[in-house]
Length: 97
Length: 283
Image 1 (cartoon, one colour):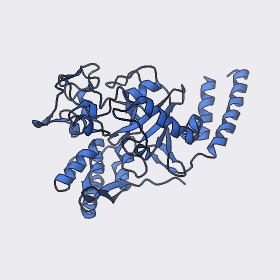
Image 2 (image 1 turned 60 degrees about the vertical axis):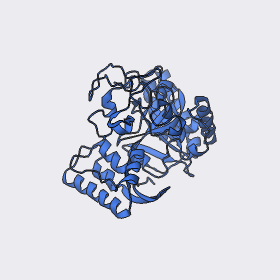
Image 3 (image 1 turned 30 degrees about the horizontal axis):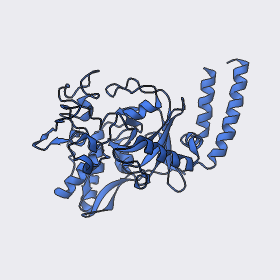
Image 4 (image 1 turned 45 degrees about the vertical axis):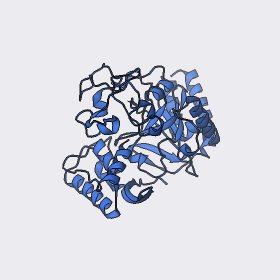
């Protein structure tokens, strides 16, 4: 449901850039992961801003997962949608051998 | 521990090691860890396994999940809704619009059911939905947490390639009791641990429906899960979701990967199974 709302926002308006004024929370970080962006650059800018905010003011980790580590696993990737190509954050976790 | 019990423990752990090692040969070795939970993929990535004892109840999608007369932003033990408004983030959370249908006349507040057995309740949504079925303001367009066993994927897992889409199915078993349930992926959670699921899911793995407000009634035990990514494309489970069809489709896929024995073995390391059994016998 978070995803549907984010996608609707992305298609209806300029890409949402989540606010970084507050500490990251489980829900605000999820909203960032669910956001859709019109270009790779906008996606990367949002991701860089998230990392920078966390570097400057670390938020409370979730079950030992820090937001710094969470965002470190994130990459921007494209996806095809009925209205064209959109960009989203995708997670790439380090694989066990 | 008595001599007899020690002998029994030794015998059982030998059996466990030999039987699970046979299965373990076909169990996946690769994967990744998420918040301390190892996730293992089958070689063709048609299935992945994990086990956890973390449990959280989701009431979203139940027509009686949330009621406007309950106290906002708090979570008392009782109320009219089976879950508290704080769980929906209403009114001050940033996410209530992802949980409750907005009122078309005033999107700054949630819509209220105008008829039916739960007239007066809010309309609670799930990520898995079929708004063509009854329209976005109908509870019938969402998955009823009290009736359908579903799991919630944390956002960081849902946003990882190969972890499944809404509507994909799987199977779970309570490793302590042997109870089982099929499930569908029907909701997305925030950044959280694996182990959030619907009221019906926990009811199937325990003895009663848990209280979403405080988790009372959640089953004891460690739960093993297998998810079949991509299965939603061809699993015929209907809408509203037919539990019998869900069971049939999930069972077929479970059998194809080795059944319950494979699920029990592949969801957790062999050594962990053996040590858990030994601990139980020593009690």
